[in-house]
Each structure stands twice: as C-alpha cells, then as structure tokens.
Length: 70
Image 1 (cartoon, rainbow, N blue to C red):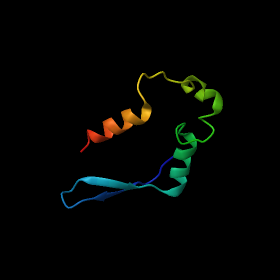
Image 2 (image 1 turned 60 degrees about the vertical axis):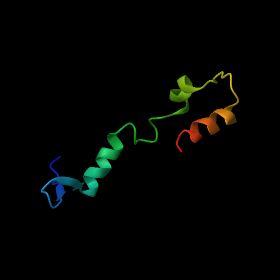
Image 3 (image 1 turned 120 degrees about the vertical axis):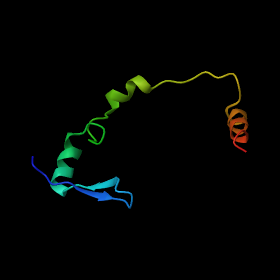
Image 4 (image 1 turned 30 degrees about the vertical axis):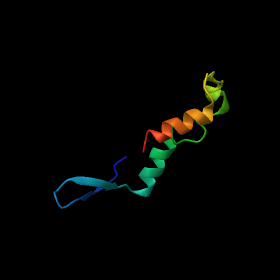
C-alpha cells in the first residue's frame, strides 16, 4: 500500500508527530493484535487468573508505600 505520511517537525527540525491517512490507519488497526478487540479473549486471559498470598494487611501496605512518595 502506497500511502503518503506527513510529518510534523518542531523548531529544531526534529520529527515529533506523523499524520497518517485514515484508510492506512484503519488497515494498521485491523492488523495489530493489541488493538484488535478480538485478540484478547477470555481464554487468553486464563493464564493471568489467580490470587496472591501476602502476609501483611493490604491497606497498611498501600499506605506505607504511598507515604514513601512524600
């Protein structure tokens, strides 16, 4: 597919963004597994299902970690 991409260049002459023709964008979206909504189905998520065992109270841990940001 021969599509013309247009680049946006900042004041330093660096490419910062690209303008993609809509038909080319739709083709990219349809062919990209991470964007394709059918790609991540329930059966694919089974490997991430489970639970963790922790020895501390989750809220105490959360407060402790957040206090480290201060």
